[in-house]
Image (cartoon, rainbow, N blue to C red; front, side, top):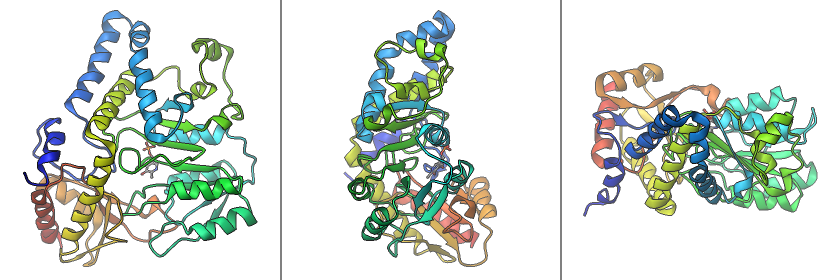
Length: 379
Ligand SMILES: Cc1ncc(COP(=O)(O)O)c(C=O)c1O
């Protein structure tokens, strides 16, 4: 058995393709079963009525909510389905007890649109000290949160543009010792890294590493905050929730892509069947293998620590290549799907565009050789 045999099943669960998908950090490839579950729910809506179908699907949705809560170390009552990670952050910023002028502390690799959302909410942004690899310096964090406690610390657990993973569980312990809440952006972490951290709020999308359908994200709020959220909901929204519901569920849109939520619940079940710990180890291995192979390609430089436990690799063009044109050429001439990562993704850290490579567990040495050959040509 070659090391890849174990993960061939993951590829076999998906529709055949001659495209090489190295873009899970944008959106993963949904399994055939996830696609079937999504469309089957849409069909039931047309057959029996949308709200009747939703009521029938309630146990499946509740199971999915419980399983997602397990992955996030949260309680099912603290999980709200929303449309995306950005929508989740918007809901948190709108309801968390914050005042204009409050401070949020971040690291330099923070996701650009999050910085924008913080500023739009009237928050002041403070920058935390980091180690040479970009991970938060926990001792400096301890000094910061005890000396000048911010309204909350915000960490993006898995960085979007290069291999970097933040120590969120350790950071949560440091923050909590000082009475400061921690929020975690798990958009790139859910289904990729260990997302049980003890954070007060976490949020993600299901379409990336969990390979759920597009348009379904979620947030998780720790119980002590449930009744402190300033949720504005109409009487109709309140009476529409089943008795005994958590207030956090008021953050969900009443009108929602329920078929997509069903699809995500299917993807979560398949992720649990594959074994989250094994998937995490495999993604770290795939990332290291990609960086090792790409480190040999003339004209490109791997950015950051090659050993970081992330499947995301950022590549810097070292021979004047245009990243957007390279991405387009990889797609058009080689059927290889990647991302051209603009510096606006992380404006406090990135200065130039990077080519992002983000394979999933099924990546083979042959896939990497195909990418390396195409890139060498592009250089
Ligand atoms: C780190 C990070 N945070 C947030 C987001 C936003 O996610 P969404 O597109 O679901 O709003 C992304 C998307 O790529 C991301 O990489």
